[in-house]
Image (tube, rainbow, N blue to C red; front, side, top):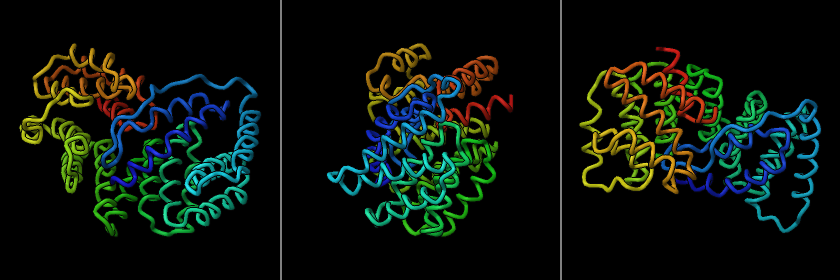
Length: 343
């Protein structure tokens, strides 16, 4: 879903601004920086390291008010482009919903539709799951419900709902939503995104064969190795957990590609062409990996490889590391937590 990937890259700087504005959500802002671990279709690992301080007692209300005041000032600027205005409106709509001002929140969503009629729903679906990382998933779901009331059945908003449900480990509800998107998918991009996230839901439910099939199907239409690598690695993890040989399929897909550029060193390790130590060093020293919180996915796949070798203690330790290193809006956090519950 290249359009969504581009949208997320355009939105990322605004969420950096939000990190400064939202003093009450220290954890949320840091988590949002790490939230874009992978695009559902073709995004790279994104920047961020997860975690963050908890707000001081009493800071929540003050921070919320300060944020709304700051957003009001930003939105009063006449020089904002339509896209910029729509992004800030989506953030303010979320903050207003958190403050219990639902009618004002819905007015901002309506205004998004006015200023950016062809893309407002993609802006909303790109910002809300990350904002939900602050812990207010109920507000996130209310915002997405409001969006769907204005554009019923929109696939990007429904996929965003599924992401939020996966943040609270309601994978069955996410699966149902994604089944609905796939039943009515009008474009290949919608289908790819829904398949990728349905693969996540199936993986976390322990439906590994179904997850592998979803990730495999989500490869259709991806034209570059960089775009294909994320679902390839997730397919590998699903095949390993289903008791199948994941290496053969991964080796075929990799072919003669260079495995130097992050996150390709993960594939190099899984194919037995590098050591665990080399992967850990790459995750901590490679510039792209450092920007992308590479220690998060590296810990998860080290855990998957440990399971493949039958070393459950090593797998447990790596999944615990992934759980600690990956933000709660990350697919790796969800999967590591689910695997630990099954051990």
